[in-house]
Length: 204
Image: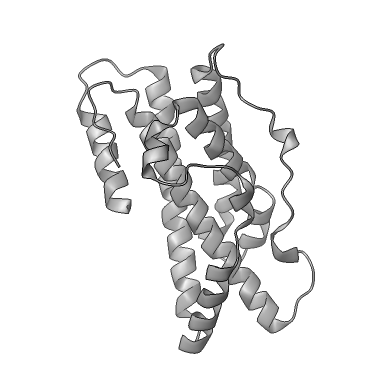
């Protein structure tokens, strides 16, 4: 999937000889930012897994597969075909929701290292960029819904004092879900950006 996203980005950048519009520039910046966040999420998750014992990894992965990420409550395309059928505004709106859902939980991922401390400000920058894209691509036929109606519960009561085992599970869940959601946003923004190039093939 990561390779497909990279190929889509290359196609979108190189296929059109038309002048780059402000919207295209904004998309390029947004895609670059979410790619950075996705790579950061992958590295943090990989580093955390490497610090675990083999049995701990197996148990946590088993638990995670039976659980849900908070953002699973955000309605999004169920597969690549639905993603391709979704409008640019819909993909942007879902991306905005996903990024917004991490504004508060991301605080618990910060601290301890420079890369971790980049998460919250980078999410804020990405959210602002996506909102600008939504406004630029909104028309009378599609309305960007008010996000205030969407209230997600905190991740696994991470703000409470937990025992060692629960703390380990909480950290695993946060990092795994963060990686999963940044991958989603990267996919949606890349497809939406590709749509701006009429000659491009945006097939996933």
